[in-house]
Length: 236
Image 1: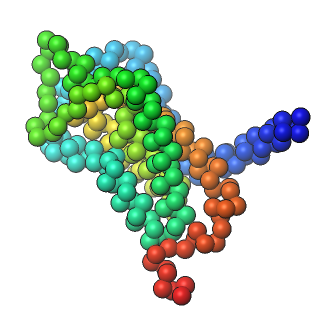
Image 2: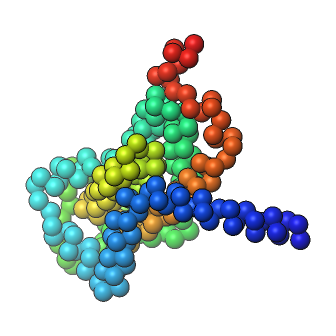
Image 3: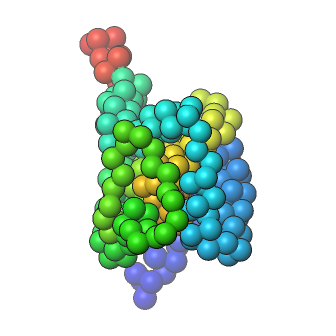
């Protein structure tokens, strides 16, 4: 019984802490919630094929260039680079971002294997419809489409950067950049609409909960984590 009541006490304490985190992330979470509701509505109204071919019909020359590079904002190179850059800002920020990537990856990769959803190129192998493929882009063809890993990475980044930014309204900018990555995955025919929608939801929920837990652990609030590589010489 003692363990039961202790667990209940921890849950009661966690709720106001979670509310505080949500308030800090509000400039990201408000537009995201609106977009998520719209996405669910579209998914109910239209089929996978209808959404895919609508987006596939929106290609334009500049977009073929822009989204080819925009999608890399959700790639591993960008993720590692940001973790290293934050070492020069604050160790705790770098640790928070790195651990957030690790946590969402540990959830996302098993989901890909469990669901085994085909990517658009594989799904439409025998489709009689003409599909536009962006030139000079390697379009993946496997059963690891759901959820979108690039989208998970992009939204993980956006949530963490919103939380640590000195100005909360930066969350709106990070939100738009994450959405750009998600859209690029569909634009490049690497994922379906539901893949990026699920990926974004996974990242936002998991990282928000992780930030709440992380930010209120005494170990992670130790003064040593407040240091940075850029201030190392000053401290010495």
